[in-house]
Image (cartoon, rainbow, N blue to C red; front, side):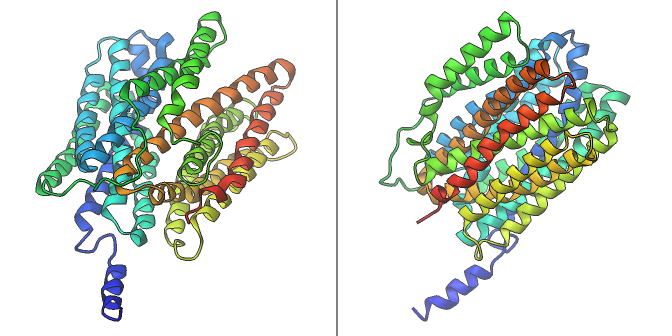
Length: 461
């Protein structure tokens, strides 16, 4: 035992950029930074592209198909990572990302642009799941929190510069130049990861474990992806066509979604099922807040757009900062307590946003809700990812990562859809327009509090 102590001390002293892990850390960080930059930068160019291609009426489909397609990419990439290790699907996802950016850049119709965004969603799902799986396979337990914090920072930081730069390029030059430029930038990490893959081609795949659960079929994932796309399109309007799309999408999700998730997810069974469910609840709350708070600030509180933009910037910094903090608390605070703390901060942010609807309070009250919610997510999301990896044997970490991404997207779609329905109902009942916001924000308290109460069920043994 005495001989093992120096070995353990030496392993614990190694950091993310030590000789052992520097290549993997640099590659993963570069991938997350540039793919995050690409994913966020195209957002302000999509309306311009849709208008140029005479497809404004189909813009909701173009904007929403990325999230729906990432469901399919996550399942595909997760299964591949479990069978052969995370580096191959990671490299394939990056190569596909470059190709899809070129497809979007050369679009001659709105349907080609939609196809490019769909394929980009597939690539994004593969990359996100592969990165999380690779962290579980490449780093020891004591480095995983810091690795996830670094990945969060590398994803969020591009939101500070990506959208403004892309907007300027689209305004001064062309929206196509944005896609071509992002393809050139993404090519560099793609080549780096492929080179790393070749240099480590002899690395063995994860050893099979005794815990076996059915692997989700790609047809099931495709059905869920289609259901998510239809549901997203459906909630964008209230005519017969949109209602039919919503009903069809919800039916597909109700029938097939459970097959992509660990058994017991909907009843929050202890371990991985509860962890996966918590990711969906938290994501639904945060991204719904992110959608409705700026709308409130613009339409009701008449806040300048620059102030709203500063709120988004502050939220990005707050998320990255909180993620950095959780990376330093892994030995002092159990992960499930950080999840509970993050969920309580989300609930407080919802209460703050609700208070921000009151004319007597400053408009910045609602804007500050975005910062508080981002702090909660910075604590919660990396902690849930670590818990999901801890609950999974090495050859099932890809499955766990894909399940987490599936509930993240389903949570966004479901909570956003319910909040939108209450918002429109409230608009019909309230003459000032505030009733719709109060109803939407009130709904968000339910998943926030529920996530805090269920956090203990995600704890490790």
